[in-house]
Each structure stands twice: as structure tokens, then as C-alpha cells.
Length: 95
Image (cartoon, rainbow, N blue to C red; front, side, top):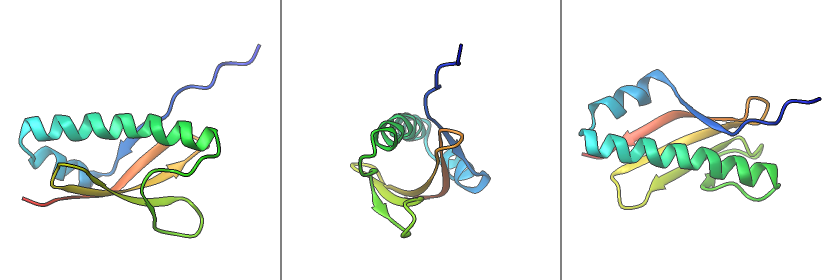
């Protein structure tokens, strides 16, 4: 019997994680919640072969840029279907 596919997760590199830790706690929590929901949205879009959220940063469909509406934050994410994960290599907080 094969094991069911697990959901998608988000992983953040060290520098963006530091930016997140520098934010006020309420903003940081909103950003974490947004990124967690985004991982599920990206995974669903990828699994259904739909366009992924954000602006493509390459021709391979691996790196995307996205602002968080209503928040002073923009970030980039990369897609890793083999591990069902998105990674955040860049996160900019305008404060």
C-alpha cells in the first residue's frame, strides 16, 4: 500500500528568518500565517498544473516574487516539488 502524499510546507533561509524575528510580534505572526497558507496554495496550483501565485522571476517556473497586500513586506519564493516545499530566500520588510 502506498503512503498518501503529504501537504506542502514552507522553509525560510537564515537571513529572511532574522528579518522576521526583527518584526513586531503581531506582524511576524501575520507573515508566518500568510506564508503557511501560501505553501498550500502553491502546492495545490502546482499539483493541478495551474499558474503559481506571484511574478515569475525566471523562465523555469521555479522562482517567484510576491508582495503581501496590506503589509510592508515583499518576498521571493522558490518551488521544490520533489519535497513538496516552498523556500523563502528573500524577505524585505519596509519599516
